[in-house]
Amino acid sequence: MPDLPADFTLLQVTPELETGGAEQTTIDVAHAVVAQGGKALVATRGGRMASRLEADGGRLAQMPAQSKNPLVMLGNAARLIDLIRREKVSLVHARSRAPAFSALWAAHATGTPFVATYHGVYNARSNLKRWYNAVMTKGDLVIANSEYTRDHVIREHDIAPDKVVAIPRGVDLSRFEPGVVGADRVEALRKAWGVADGERRLKVLLAGRLTRWKGQGLMVEAMKILKARGEDRVLLLLAGDDQGRKGYRAELTAAIAEAGLEDAVKLVGHCDDMPAAYLLADVAVAPSLEPEAFGRTAVEPQIMARPVIAADHGAARETVLPGETGWLVKPGDAEAWADALSRAGDTGAAGRQTMGLTARTRARRLYSVDAMCEATLKVYARVLRARVAERSS
Image 1 (tube, rainbow, N blue to C red):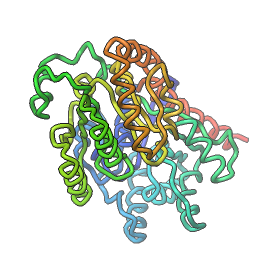
Image 2: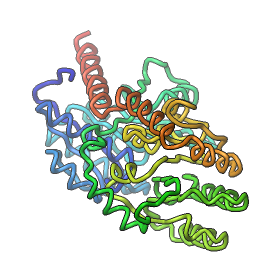
Image 3: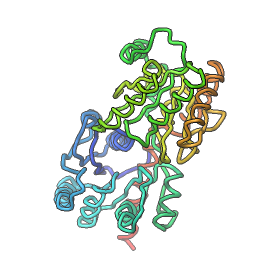
Image 4: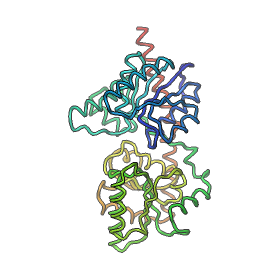
């Protein structure tokens, strides 16, 4: 790990700590800073992951960081200025656009170094939206969560390439480790999800919140096509929260019933034990309709030695090697996805195991949380050194 000042204090600003890759990365980096002897603060609305932050030695600074109301954002800026001064914050790291405005204002007011992470490829259909997105590029340095995202940031905002650093999202290898997941955990999930003991069908897992662009509807359509072809060898497991999207969940349930797929497609809800979920599955799918900026649901299963079928766009082209660690499929094409599911079945258990082991070796090397944290702390050290050099020149 890079050397940081002995009194280093990091303030990360993120909307909430409910669930998701940006939130997990926030906690991982906070843990790494504490392990280095520093202090780690997170300004956020809070959420179910806040207890994990505090268990790792981080501290919660609760405020309505998720709000896009300009008056609330101004209030958050005042709160952050007070927090930065009181805690002698060394560096501010914003992880989302709305709170980035408050964090940037507070950083400027206190003369504190500021970095931001582009966790997604934000759409900009107007100059106003492009201006809004550009707040993430106004600090000392920008972190992009993949080379795909980095290329987008440089092109979209016309900024110098040396100001944008790609740091792939990290996965906790101590948690995503097949050897530490007991058979009892896999068995508990099997029972909870209603998967038959000795199920012989290909168990395919789509992990992701229930939102249209994640592609659950597309996979139901692919299963419908397989059924029309007379194929019944796939069991599709849809794991994820609807996060208030009751209408979309009802739409999926209706589509499953209308196609007569109740025995072949299961909506299993939120899952707290994803390592066990990937071991229960034979194959994971990541059929996002829009390009993923990173896509941890294409990486985590590979670390658990499971091949992945992913949409052929975005960062999946970096994380999945076609024919070696999984398959890439035309985005949004239900026929192509039905073909891919058939191909995964035809590969056989031995073939899938070989692909899974190749995937595990590669993903462990490229996407560990330790590598991500080390690279992030190097960015912090680089920014602090540059500020010192500026002051002395």
